[in-house]
Image (cartoon, rainbow, N blue to C red; front, side, top):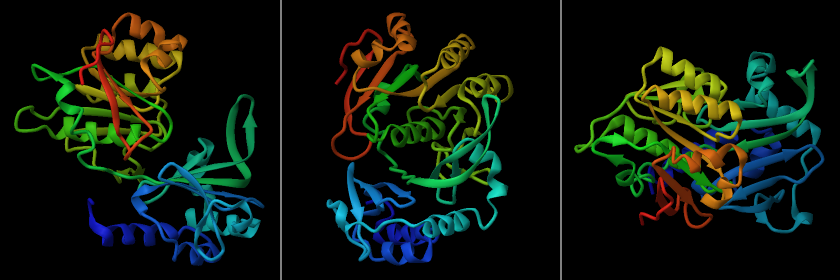
Length: 322
């Protein structure tokens, strides 16, 4: 395993410091593989939950995993309030801009999703109060998980416009990170390219105070916490990327930005939620993209094995290449 067991223990010890003291004592003895942990969920007056290897478990007061609801530790308002204080270093106000978007990114690249009462100004969220729900999405890097797909993404030294299609929790962002890193760094056969990343939810580079916590390569520039459609056009104008990478496209604004990127001669690597090519073909925004054969490669992931497991790779006409 990359990094070794001691590395996993260090990451786990670093992560559990954000929790309340009572929960910290529970988690300290939890038997688990850190690299298989995906989410930890806290809800006031709700059971303490973990998603581990795509399975949901209740966390018991003794620090064990159980499938039985009655075994769960129940999260109190005090537990959640204290956890928020540790996450924000006792200053939620300092994270006001991030909270407005519904999350805080912490050291290690882990994203803390927040929900509670939204304070709005017309149709925009100004802030959030009475935060009662927390979802910690753990950030993992799996260097080399893109090795299988990389040979299919190049032709004559040029990168294909590529769409990664994946159901939830199948490692599309993990795969995207490694693809970005390999394109940016280059290989003995293919020189590295300048990559611009629009990281709307701070999940790809997982920037903490402006510094990416994940390795996206030596030629990568990151536009953090910026809407994808705006960010793609901004990067084209300011950073002259050869490749632009974005996660979870889906809106009509994204479609317009994609066309702008491609018309500027820049290559695009993007992800989308879906179970198959037929699934995304049925979506209004993507039907025309597939019909016009905009993407030269489609990488479809499956909900089996480790994150980033590839089910198939297709060319622009939908023909399997595996």
